[in-house]
Length: 181
Image 1 (cartoon, rainbow, N blue to C red):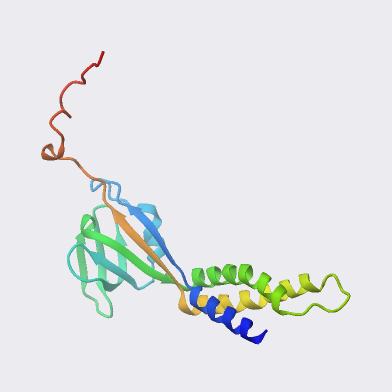
Image 2: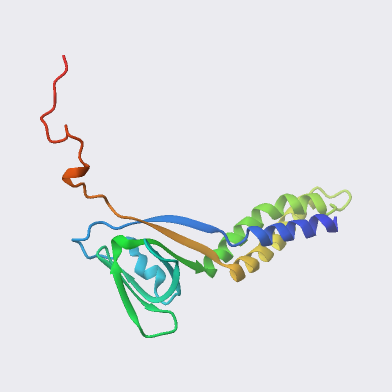
């Protein structure tokens, strides 16, 4: 019984704090808007940026528009700017999201575990239900704590709309459609 409890606590500690991948679409370089409310999500956070060239780096005071991205080097007052089309990923850790993920994982995993390892009182039909709820709450609280500590990694992969040039079009693209009979 104790071994099962330890295994489930260890399991929930490992899975709490997930990674969520999303796509950030940069609409057009001619429309200087912040895409998908990204700036609200990264305000006051240390963000890891990855550009086309170079290794990922941590940055503060990041602002993204469809034209460019500006940031301050972490721990300094030096401001940098790059074209938004050079941006590959934007990632950050959300401890609140980690706590929520951990809670949900623990609530779901804890119910069957609680029902399985806690002996139901003899003669009571509600014993297993109470045990399932107790296990669910205990594992859920534990997983929420671990998730809040580890956090949940949010990764935005940047998608820049392609602008076809004449060299990218197939030869028949500019020709009139051919009717097939």
